[in-house]
Length: 203
Length: 203
Image 1 (spheres, rainbow over the protein chains, first blue to last red):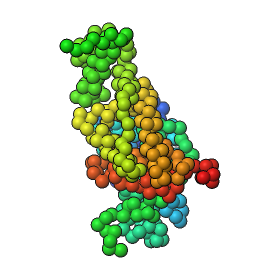
Image 2: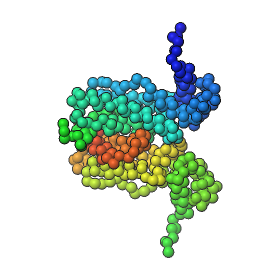
Image 3: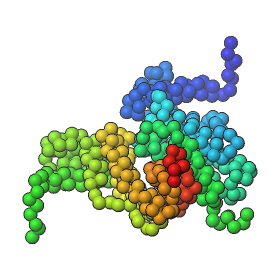
Image 4: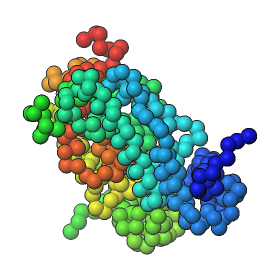
């Protein structure tokens, strides 16, 4: 017998889960153009009025899906080396961007259509990149990197080619790309490419 | 008095120019959502029927704008060094992506909406990256790079952070980004990151 969930908001939270699952399913099947409030309500088994009142429009639904995605325990890979961590991270990104149904790709595409989805997508990326900074901290502690290495531009350099090829250039997935992009950034980082000029002198 | 232009197709070419200019102007003012065949025809001073017959729909107009963009004499910067060329290229990309009205950004956004625009955008990127390969050829001739350096992944690595930050992450333009991304790729390239394994041994 499932344990009772007496916390306040339990029913509200359950309805949210049903609705957001329905958004993902509809988005995976029909893409942004086929996503409607009514189809989401019907699939979730929730009153239309509830969906309109709480989420307002399709942009509101997508924004909540994206915000809910940060509400997890995801941590970046920890392989024991900077290049290994970045390569594993890039493989996760490549897998997400090429998954079927193409949920992540559809959410990114939606961020070009809806301002709410745009803002939520940016919040999600900010959250993910912030969590990834530990990769750089660990590499500094292992003396793989200079102490004042700036984490964010290193992480952007490592991951950008995967996004660029799959989301914008839309080339077929290249199994060598995650590792190559990781190696490129790690090589540049160990050659001090991401040490902030103001702090490079005081180590 | 302007010289006559007796080449066949002169009138057709002129109408195409008028229509494509009108697409750019409408796109800059209203974005993809405000772009209509009728507004383009009116602005261009061309019969609606002509526009529908020749371009079919908004996706067809956007695809032709993108295809026309390759029909130019653009060459990548030639500054005398690999890092200088890549930095200058990145500055051109950053300028294009942040220009007002935001034509290039609107065309990229449209490529998520229209399959025809998507294919044309990919053709345009392929054309631009192919032209940029001379940057790597020159660097090899100057002995800045190993002879079997693979041009395309190097160019992707150099330019991807600019696209990633401005098109996907949508962070405010960072004046240091074009140079930093160029330096990162150049450092990695001189450390052999882009030498193909099969050819690395035979130099």
